[in-house]
Image (cartoon, rainbow, N blue to C red; front, top):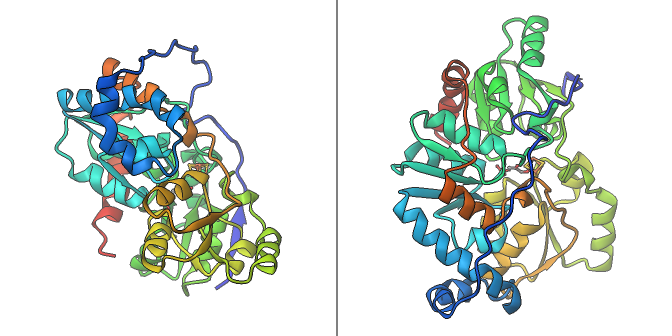
Length: 357
Ligand code: 13P
Ligand code: SF4
């Protein structure tokens, strides 16, 4: 079913991503024999993707973070785009946006350290209003979350009275508060169909909307927001790759443009892409998404060859081990959501989390 209409972003405000942050000195931790010894089993997990000199820098931070998170009764939730030393060596839970939201809803820890971007930390806070939720660098934003405001959603509702609104979790709390239900890339079709409506406003990712529209009979009204990482891939570069090596397998995230999806052997959320590679063990594969995903799976499956292209998400890359340690020591940057907005946003997020997939 083609999309009925797409509306454009009217503004790109910096949502929860203040630019006026001063640079702070990083705590420097020296390499020690104890750090090397304590972290040896963790290095064994990542040695295929982290060279030894880099590990000598990481090891003292890994040791300190793993000790401190127990003292703080903290849980570290890390998105699949985090770098291998975070994903494999300090995270308690890793996953795609839906898995992280589900874990955030279940956790008994007093403190949540979100290693991902700001909307993910906000989602954890919305689900856990009484817990301390920290993000190691609050400038970690997202071009999709920045493409739309709560006011934009209110205007769309006025224009299309009675049409339900589905918002991708890659949005601010303000936008979630104006929505009927949230979705992620792993449940978007199911969420749209769960409403039983013949038309749905689907925000803010235009390419994800096109992907959903191709897989449902529900009519969609979309927004022209894009992921700055996935919109850069082209169908042409993938066709070139296949021409050079017809045996290569291509898997893509649904935030990619339609001509990229058309070239892919499989399309799914970051977690489904990882599961696909784990299950299928291709000889050579292109993961058309953020670069750290391939590094994380490569650490686990050294026999698979991961072929470029991939693109870096500059927001995800703001999260580093020294910043995670600072975050745990000083309990910063604490994520705050206005309680009135959080209450309304929670309904939309919980409705998604409770949906049986
Ligand atoms: P996933 O929910 O598939 O992990 O996607 C989140 C994201 O931001 C992808 O760019
Ligand atoms: Fe946002 Fe794209 Fe980065 Fe995901 S990869 S956090 S959608 S900018």
